Length: 102
Image (cartoon, rainbow, N blue to C red):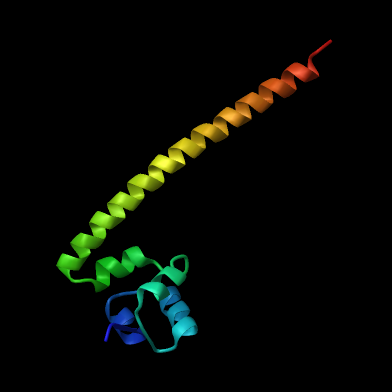
């Protein structure tokens, strides 16, 4: 059974804040499911968990998926940032012109 325990987290060096959050959320242990991990994606550091709780072959697989997800995030973030800057510049131009129509 794929279970994570408070004891296992402490033994692996998890910070006390994350251990407390884990205990408050799940109690002393939890059976890991994909759905559970997705549900708590924003609650826990899965990067830390991967590095400290996965064995090497699984960690390598995780790192490949992580790299692909990070590359997509950067691509989308860059496009969003460019659009944000474009909208701010356009809005400034429109408002500045309107304010100086004398």
